Amino acid sequence: MTAQKVRTLELKDYKQFERLRQNETPWPYVTDAFTQIWDLAYEIVPRAMLTVEWENAWAGGAGYALAETDPHLAFIGIIIKPEYRRRGLGQEAYTKLIDRLRTRKIGRVLTIVNTRQESGHDFVTQRDFHEIGRSIYCELNTATAAVGVLGDAEQLVADQDLRFTTLNRFPQRGLADRLLPIWNRTRPDQPQHWPYVPVSAHRFEREILAPEAISWEHSFVIVTPANDIVGLSLNIPTAENRLFTFYTGIDPDFRGKKLGLALKLKLIEHAQSQGFAGLAAENDADNAAMWRINKQLGFISVLEMVTYQKLLEAYE
Image: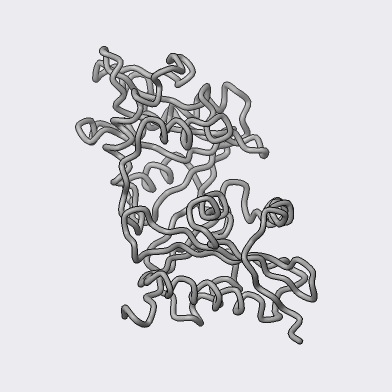
C-alpha cells in the first residue's frame, strides 16, 4: 500500500493550508503560484483543489484556476510542506492535476515561480515548461531617496491643470464607478498571459477596493478640474512598514507627461511624512519605461517572479 495519497480538497483541510501559507511566504509582497489560485479556484471550479497526504498526514496541496475568457487555458500551483519534499509528492500532485485538465480539454497551462525557489524552477523546466515572462519586485529606502533631483510632484501635475488627492477623500459610495473607467482603460496594458476581462463596478468594489486589499488613505489619484481620475497608484502597508504599490495606471490620453514619475515622487514624499521605512513595487520586466523611473529613484531589484507555460500534448 502506497504511503502517498492525493484526493480532492475538503473544507476541513482549509486550516492546514492557511498554516502552510503563513510559513511559506517567500517575500512580504508576493506569493507562490499555489497561493494565488487558492483564493479563487475552489469557489470557481469544482474539484479544482487537491490535498496531498503522506502516511495519512497532511503534506500539501495543488490546484488550478481557469481563465475566464479562454476555455483552454489554466493556471496551476503546487505546494508541499518542507518536511515532505523529495518524496515524489509534487510529481504525484502534478500528474493528478494534468489528468483533470486534459479531461477539461485544457491545452495551455501556466504557473509562476519566484527566483528564490530553485527547486521550483527545476521542477517546471524538467517537465517542459518554458518561460514567457517575468516581473521584478523592487524596494526603495525612503530615508535615502533623493526625490528633488527628478522634479517636484505637485508642480508636475499643476502645470497640466491637474491635482493629487487620496481615495479616502472620495465618498465611499460610488467610488468603484468613478475608478472603473481608468481601470478598464489601463488594465489591458498590464502584461498578462491570459485574456483581459473588463470588470463590473460590483466586482471591482469586492475584489480591488476591499479593506484587506487596499489602503484608501495611502492610495493616490490624479484628477482633472472636473474630478475625473486620470492617474492612480493603489497601495497597501506591509508588516515590514513599507508601502507596497500593487497597481499604477495612467490614462492613455495623459501619457508622455511625466505623470507616472509624479505619482512615484508623491508616494515617496507621503511615505517619508508618514514614517514608512520604504516602498515596494512590482515591475513587469518588459515595462522598460516604469523600470527606468524606478531605477532613477533608487529602487533596487530584490526578487523576480517567472511565468512559465506548457502546452499539453494534444494541443502541441
